[in-house]
Image 1 (tube, rainbow, N blue to C red):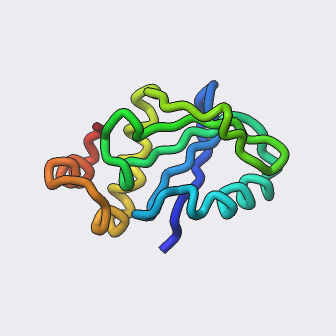
Image 2: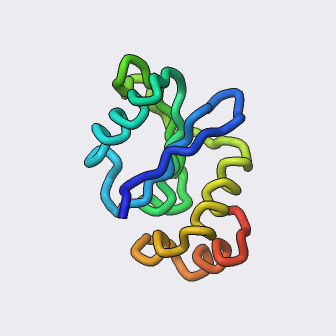
Length: 119
């Protein structure tokens, strides 16, 4: 299983969206994310969704700048993005439900994913 998936978006603030799939902190595989983004010669803001690691709390979403193949963690901050990203995560997890099995999500959250309902 992959630790993350990088999704393209049409959002004006975030053109790339990293959905963390591993139960490990994304810092454990940050070099892999940087490598994948570098292959695309990407530069800009990245939005991380840590739902499967952190749950649906205030530290679920994190924004960070990326340029020249590296994340600028001085720019990192917890954010509350538009509903589009919550729906994108649920859509992806609905279609790839095996990722939910070993997450910290509770039964209510798992049920919402099975119904394709954002939270």
